[in-house]
Amino acid sequence: MSRPKIIAGNWKMNCTPAETKELITSLIASEKSESEIVTIVCPPFTSLSVASELLSESSIKLGAQNLSEHESGAYTAEISAGMLIAAGVKYVIIGHSERRQYYHENDSLINAKLKAALNNGLLPIFCVGESLKEREAGKSQKVVSGQLLNGMDGLSLENMRNLTVAYEPVWAIGSGKTATPKMAQDMHKYIRENLAKIEPAIASSTPILYGGSVKADNAVGLFSQPDIDGALVGGASLSADSFMKIIEAA
Ligand code: 13P
Image (tube, rainbow, N blue to C red; front, side):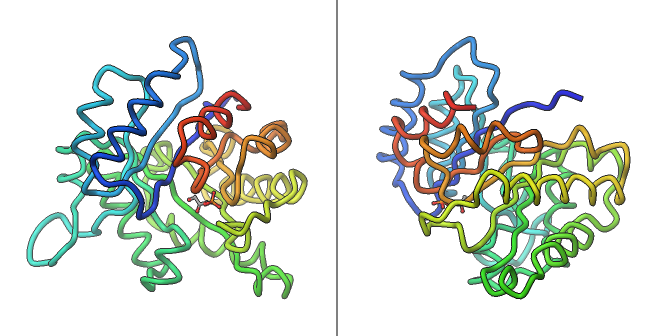
């Protein structure tokens, strides 16, 4: 089954609204109208409305980096799925390793966030990946299969069809150490096998993105692998030039 190629930029805690305007204006200027690549940008919350306005005539889609598992109420500083939708957001990153590591998000919270997103019509980019310690202990597969199984617990088939998975080995994020195409492919294939065990109907159709120090010069090798359907890009998505080069490599 053919799957869409997706390149998503996770801007993390970067870009004021003015900087967002500058970056998105440059992306729009170099956007290829005939491109079949699904391009997504995920600015911080405070830049979503300016981004949404600028992208209204563009094929570039808007994503957020997190959401609350709750619908509304007394949850100071949280942002709900409904608020994201009202701000023009289509995609949302859930379970990023920085959220797991620094903000103690565990599989059950991530599961609740996936449900909140999907039940409100947002498309999650569900992140999984092992730490260096776990890889060195030979536990990468066990960690990733557990994150998938627990994160997706109780999702309906219809909801699962709207998932994109991102494999981001923690040791490759922001470190300049990319997984080799073979290492990444092996894990992507393993993820697809696990998706087949969870729900056979989604295994071949779910896009699986690679993330971790993706740059224009390593993107071609990664994208040539059969189970790598694109990338979740951090640092290199903060410059229109380097992000566009990655899109061109897809
Ligand atoms: P870098 O591309 O900066 O390594 O970040 C990857 C990432 O965490 C994307 O979500």
